[in-house]
Length: 255
Image 1 (tube, rainbow, N blue to C red):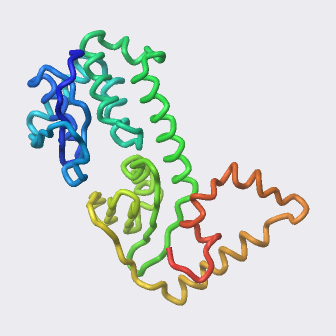
Image 2 (image 1 turned 90 degrees about the horizontal axis):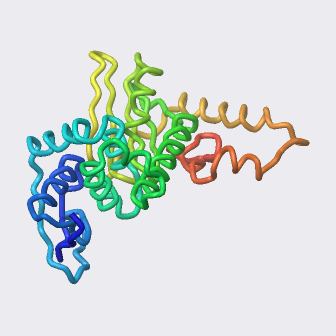
């Protein structure tokens, strides 16, 4: 399927919607010029086609990734969709179509431009998720622990299970401000739920919470050995873009 249709697909941004775009390629017998979200400005000279999300169709495409290519390829597509890779939908669509032709070998073709781009994006996703496991800070909001994050990739589905296990007796709220995505964990019944929201307002910290923040900052500042302070090394091990959400770097501000 090397032909390019003079069309740009527009979909709802969900993973199921993306899989329906894959199915639409077969229906059109051509690749689109691009893939956009429905709420994006069109900004293209090509015609557009709105691709409706059909969960049943998406499930069939999802199964085919494992059956016709490999479980590894299926995982690469799932995780690849969480990345901030430029033109990720087109890279993933081309990867899937190559997989249908060549089978499981496609995952080992690291010199292929699409496979290379996906591998690179997945490494970035993995590293960013790891950083968030290390650097995510929670605040006691009275009845639940809350944390705000601002990742480049959609890491929340990857890191949320870790904190559910780590704080399984607590109620948790994690909000990804970059992608307008939140996660809610209720310890009673171990209920887990993702939700979409433009923003999330948290209550002002209590006096006790404020005091504990001050104590944490004092601990962080006190354990530093003045003669061995190395700002460059710290920035390498703890990238500065995470500091805005870390209690030890905040002064008189709420997460």
